[in-house]
Length: 308
Ligand code: NAP
Image (tube, rainbow, N blue to C red; front, top):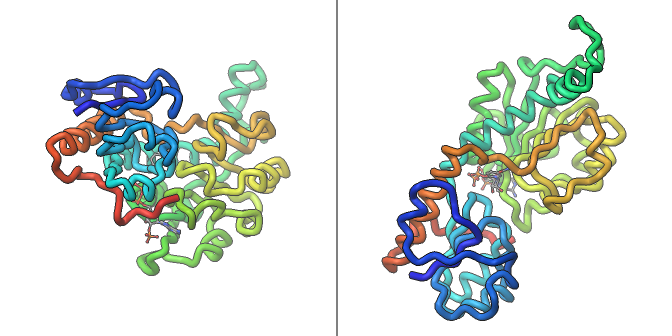
């Protein structure tokens, strides 16, 4: 099976694949024209749509490195009988850890303090009001999207003494709230829904306005789930604070955010640990190997999937 990959993925599992070529740039140009001999694409975040699929008439599988596959037109793949797979589960703990890291960094002013120390602006002592944060224990976390990562975040938050509320479309379970109620009731909101037609712009200006004064938004899901312009307005006003790992137009980050003390910014690193990335490669390769044997890949995302 001939594979075209966007990069060499980390870890020993990648070496189990024998016939791999690499893209020379972004798709579709990076494919270098029509590629009739390609059976499989191994991608991370590249847009895969009809225009790209036209280049690969023999394609059997698009294997996505990552659990979120919103960059792939799943409907277009399904219409051509092309399997789409992802790498769920193995990145749950790392992403949940990052959500907590952002929560702690924002609430305890860690980045503001770090910068002050580095720049020689720490005047000594420990009572400087510039570094005054908010208690994590005793506050309430509202989780939007109570799936694998959302539930892993809930476990961690409980260990920090936080109360946990949650919202998913499937109603019920401990702490379930309607979305608007959850946004108004929690001190910290953490997003863990996939990006779909339903969740694009889910947190629009009116929903952001429901967040409490001094509230905090953590986003390790996808930037487009939030109306980014409305979020920037709320953050510039200083009414709320945020920890953001994802943005609407990556790698662009709204310039207004860069100098704000009430925001912590990371470059989409939810799954970025060596162990997790190697485990993701293992899952990616298992899907490719199954397709090579003409078996059903273990992590097929449709027909259950909703195309974005
Ligand atoms: P998951 O297990 O499928 O969980 C997603 C949850 O969202 C489900 O509980 C689902 O429950 C809920 N949901 C879906 N649509 C909804 C809607 N319209 N309204 C409310 N809830 C909705 O997925 P996961 O493995 O936890 O991953 C979640 C997302 O995290 C991924 O899709 C990806 O975009 C993102 N992610 C980011 C990074 C990073 O590096 N920053 C790393 C990993 C993952 P119901 O079906 O009951 O609604």
